Amino acid sequence: MKKSSVFKLVAFVLSSLLLVGLAWWLIARSHAPDSDDQASTGAPARATTEAGGQPIITVDRTSQIRSGIATLTLPVSAQRSTLHTFGTVLDPSDLVVLQEKAAAAEAGVQRASASRNASAAEYRRLKALHAGRHDVSEKALQAAEAAWQGDEASLRAATSALSVVRLTAEQQWGTAIAKAVFEHGKLFEQWIHHDQVLVQVLLPAGTVLPSPPRAARLKSADGLILQAAFVSASPRADIRLQGASLFYTAEATSLLPGMTVRAYLPTGQATDGVVVPSSAVVWLQGKAWVYAQIQPGRFERFALALDTPADDGWFAAKGLAAGAPIVVTGAQLLLSEEQRGQIGSSGDGDND
Picture 1 (cartoon, helix red, strand yellow):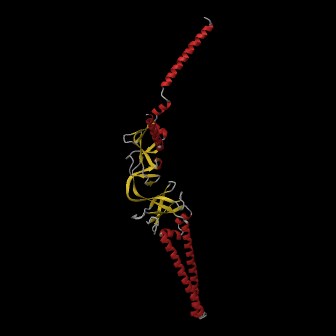
Picture 2 (picture 1 turned 60 degrees about the horizontal axis):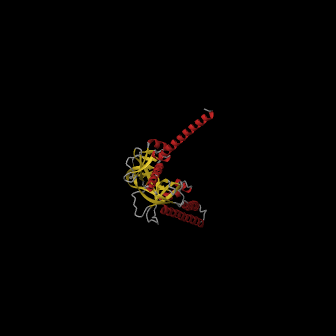
Picture 3 (picture 1 turned 180 degrees about the vertical axis):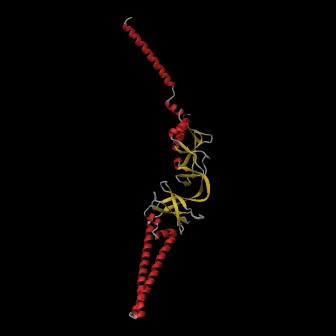
């Protein structure tokens, strides 16, 4: 056989084998599952809906570790029921004006006292001379006495003016704040230098507290929770709510004069519950939620009432699975997976 015929035969065989292999590959490819289907069927996390209608997110242990999902069994603690109200950050310039009035009144008392002391000493000196050798005339002695009596009257008037300023301050601000202003105390210094702010917390009309809470929490417009310490009760009713009000002092962080803040005052009996960290809270449709691990690898979403703020979180007396570990890291991932599962379920229904 010629070489050319051999080469043609070999080429024909190889071409035939290549075509057969390509055909088998196309057939296998057409029956292979899509990569997206593989991803979905082999996904480490999936959302299902229980009989009660509440979505359950299932995540295997390996995926929890890889995604950084961490849970924590929250210890039970006791919190007092909370009164919700609001307060206003006061302008310290009003206290500065009051301090200036107090300083002026005190200076008047000091001047009047110095004049009275000088005129009294002069009167005693002339009186001694007049009684001894009569070197001083009766007229000069009378003039010295009149000056002394006049300075005495001026001192009484200055002292009365200072008392009026102090009394007015106590009637407007209460004894504790008035004292801080008149004595130029530490709190007054902190207020005028904006290290602290003075907040007037308003109580709804008819609210009666056995004693003002020594500590309260304030929530600023940006959502920051601040600790506040009781200063004194206001001696006057609030014009807006016709109720009593309390003065609290708090760090000036993000608080400016004129701002309105939410205030939480602990009142009533203590209730058992748990403190949910802020990192565990997710938001959906304007409501706060947390995820609890109801079974190993199975997570359910529970509503959280943000009624009682706590240190770096919120106190929950009910609404959570009792004793269930709470997802403190990675809750947003679970929410995303839940929503993705709902979208997928909706799409399947449309196709049907």
